[in-house]
Amino acid sequence: MIHRFQGDRDCLSVLVVGSIALDTVETPAGKVVEALGGSAVYFSMAASLYTNVKLVGVAGTDFPREHIDFLSIRGIDTEGLLIVEGETFRWSGRYDYDRNVTETIETRLNVFAEFRPKLPESYTNADIVFLANIDPEIQCEVLRQVPGAKLKLLDTMNYWISGKNKSLCEALGMVDIAIMDESEAYLLSGERDTISGSRKILDMGPSAIIVKRGKYGAMMVSKDDYFCTSAYPVNAVKDPTGAGDSFAGGMVGYLAHAKEFTPQVLKQAMVHGTAVASYTVSEFSIEGLRTRTWQDILSRYRELWRFSYFDDKENMQ
Amino acid sequence: MIHRFQGDRDCLSVLVVGSIALDTVETPAGKVVEALGGSAVYFSMAASLYTNVKLVGVAGTDFPREHIDFLSIRGIDTEGLLIVEGETFRWSGRYDYDRNVTETIETRLNVFAEFRPKLPESYTNADIVFLANIDPEIQCEVLRQVPGAKLKLLDTMNYWISGKNKSLCEALGMVDIAIMDESEAYLLSGERDTISGSRKILDMGPSAIIVKRGKYGAMMVSKDDYFCTSAYPVNAVKDPTGAGDSFAGGMVGYLAHAKEFTPQVLKQAMVHGTAVASYTVSEFSIEGLRTRTWQDILSRYRELWRFSYFDDKENMQ
Figure 1 (cartoon, each protein chain N blue to C red):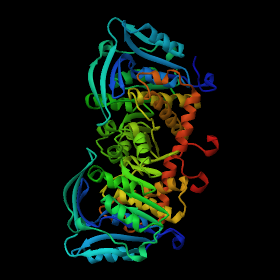
Figure 2 (figure 1 turned 45 degrees about the vertical axis):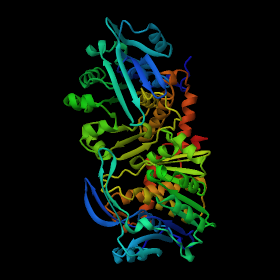
Figure 3 (figure 1 turned 30 degrees about the vertical axis):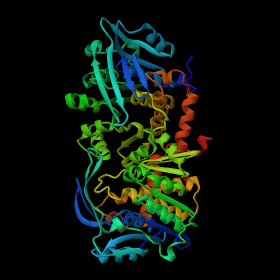
């Protein structure tokens, strides 16, 4: 049973293109082997708390049928999930909390290496498009297939910033919001200061940059606005995998629910994303999101409000 | 000319005990040689925007008279500034923004090594006492000399946490608020998670822990409360020296001005500290604070409110 935000029937629809993975993850809290993961999965799990999600991705014939059933039961449209001969993308990594770094032990792209998404006809009218961290050439291809989308967002990473900079710049010119982490913003902009760096990235096309700062939260920079939200104080982080993608999923889900993209709604959406991500990191794989309801999210949204509240609006005039 | 918060005549008085230094600092933005510095100086500069500050510290006979005059003109009481035969404490360091670390090139304690503060009679009735990062034995000695203080705070660092743990625990048992940075909270608590770590430190005595997180802001943990403030987005940080001490000075100054220490006032005070520190890091040494007025601080306080605002109180019931 899914417990969505009220009024989900009227929400905007969301399309996500990203990875479907089987993750082997080791953290100080334990280990999971070949657990359900991937950017498109985390994003969909999060966004499906708010609205209908159309997923585009590829898995191998070894991908457990129960995972697909699980996504479908959750209301995620898997028509765009391609199953091809071969093995599913596998990632294995280890988190070192002391050094605040992720060590990738092994990446086997497998069927993901040849991924060239073709959107099902029913997907091309999606209202909001989220391009997870994939080859920017693919991001461009997808963007060309959804000319009518009301809001387009992309995530990226160091690998593409260094290796496919030209395509990435082209993709950035086609989206409204770019999401990346702090080191990626540094690398892309060449600036060590996040604000100056974000302003440089704004010049590449997007009207807002959202910089993810892990346990410190997230910030948004637009031409004439700035916003910072702290992370939810999770007592014992079990597995940070998917935090960024579920942050994006919660944020985009909320935008679809709100059906407007004003600066204030975008800020509220970032806090929703923060609340959703706090559940993700509390368990391994997608377990922290499995049984969450929108009441859970709303309760953390309110807590995040209290955690950052220090003065009243009327005193700020 | 000093431009203080309105109503400063009625404010509580603040006593600070800390270092007086001549700093040689190198950052990507430039270098200063033997510039005015030290925790007690940065703290006093910040707190004197709000209230009367009584400074306790020691300098050598080489300490430029103009620095003392400058502090006095600013309204800082320097009766407790001892000048002794010898050289002033000198620190030289280099900031590596890329690695987010401070490299100490040289520390010459000089006259500071033998510092055993004896408070002038007129200081013992101070309302608020701030013990900057100094030997916890000295912190304890000072605390015993101000039994009537309404609010006691201390800062500390790795050196004392490792080297004088027993004295530090004794000092922690005598203060209301402990301030430290994230790595110090880890070391003191033995916990890698800031929330759990802060709770452990609360058990040592203070009723609130404030964790400084540099460019990410600061957080406060008490038995039943939690608060997070982001740093002010400074475009070009010139010199981070003294950021923590001027954060504390702005915070304590505001508390002295507000004359109450409720949770909400403490949160507002943290945002004031954040605003003050943002001016400190914009210039080398104490230059960023020299000409600031309380109107400047108030304007950044309001900006910080806008940067973190996303929803109205009435929606949070």
